[in-house]
Image (cartoon, rainbow, N blue to C red; front, top):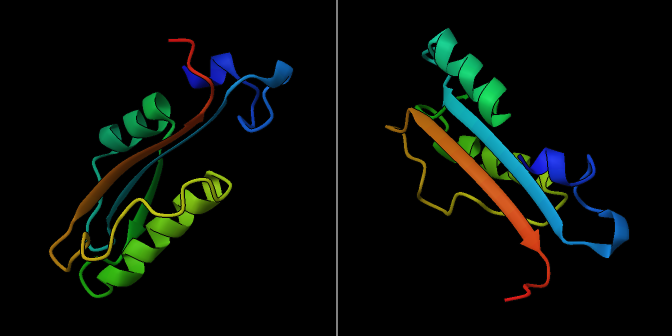
Length: 107
């Protein structure tokens, strides 16, 4: 929906309007796979990236990868989505959506 309202980059709105940036992703443990139908719906409907990470052996590295991705996709506007300790060796799936909005509210 956002892509219909704002320019492609979301950072330089025409006419000085609000700034909005959206990032959506699904990360699963590399030891398994997602059902193709789930992966396809996440990508098509939510514009989510779908990636495999190593939650089992490297949970902190997986968390850092997810946080780095969100930071890059939002042009450093959101620098952390997963706080320390939120990803552990028993984590198997992370679904995350980040929305940055900066604007003036009329009401």
